[in-house]
Length: 227
Length: 342
Ligand SMILES: Nc1ncnc2c1ncn2[C@@H]1O[C@H](COP(=O)(O)OP(=O)(O)OP(=O)(O)O)[C@@H](O)[C@H]1O
Ligand SMILES: [Mg+2]
Image (cartoon, rainbow over all chains, first blue to last red; front, side, top):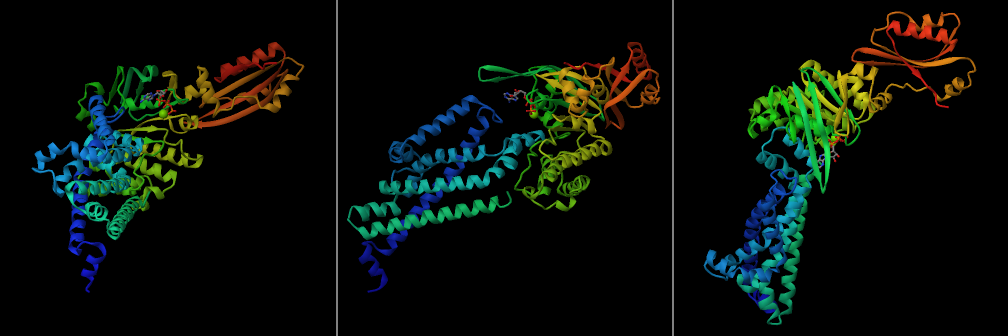
């Protein structure tokens, strides 16, 4: 028996099926992370700039963003997922498949990222911002030359934390129709009492998280090197 | 160069109103090193921040280099700020970046061509004597070196005015002195007008030509350093002056004065600059029927001039003492009778 047959024998699925699932997970994770991080960053900047004492203090904008972030963050992902089905259909045209799942994933992760990044931005010394203002920097220059570069190492760590959270959500999204490793575990592993497959997916997820964290720490550490 | 007219600034701290500035007026002339001294919370930083528009007065106005700040557009204000350098107590540098990067930032913000940036950075770093640290990271520098970078950064855009908010308060005395000398050099060689705030009278003494004393959001006393040090009027000012000029009778001599049975008077004498031409104390000693004891003496240098303070115990008849006082007054020394509480 060759190893592929052995694999099928042990885990109850074909080897390419595992690869396909992995691909789906990476696809969902990657795109949701990218889009979610960008939206999260924008929301975080709005929060930091518009907050009381911020560079562009604006009560209304702050209140709206703040409440939005709180509401979405207080909803469990599975609820968000079902809740935004109409929106998903509107954007993607269907409510199943990895691409369709990006809509709820992004909606779920961006406020989470926003909070994490907001914290990173608030860590930047107010003195540095004051110095920037005193130099005659415009708000845009303050953001691009002071705020973001100073917060970057911390933002990288925040994003790592966010990504690990996102991985959990992709598993759920997979079960509802997105495919991926989570779907594999639940549909093929749990429902068919395939214990070895369940273990395999857990190992894969654990390794995934470890690698992400390692990468995040490395990058952040590199950026922080001279502080 | 800088004119602040009747500035009022009140902050809302929860429900309470904090009166940071209550009707402050101030004029800084071109070429001045103007010091503002006051205890914590007096409103010094708020006043300083008016000058580059980081803080706007509730009422009153601020005129810098002939421009009324309240009449400037946001863009004009940003341009003006490039002509005003600012130095901070906590340096406020990008710690993870190189010295060069930090100093070049204000130039890059102003859109200076890369080549010119290089040259200018080298130039200011040479001026603050930190050339060889160009590629060092700020986090690797000592406090004094960091402040030199802070000053270099502030000078990069060739400003006309330098604002210093407690620039030496985080430094040890020796480093403080070297930074103060650097500021003096900036003033002399670059012709930069300096407005600095501090709670250390030594700083004022060492480099300022004018001083304002602030208390509870008001300027309570203002004038040339020599006159404020020589004849402080307000209680706060006296307290500040006392931190550098000791005009107290040494503990050891107090009992000496108390136990004196003969008629006596203790006098505090101040000689400012070369106001006193004759050897006054020697002349007093030569007076018949008068005994002169020196209880204390200090000499302070400021603004290229000297101020000496003597505490004299005069023993003799009332008439003799009166004559001595007359001599002191006519010689041009400042005189104050000291009263010892029992
Ligand atoms: N942005 C602000 N919001 C509220 N209160 C403020 C603000 N800035 C200053 N204050 C208050 O105004 C008063 C004067 O502050 P300021 O910083 O000007 O004092 P200072 O003389 O510089 O003191 P220090 O020597 O401690 O720096 C203080 O009571 C301070 O709490
Ligand atoms: Mg202050």
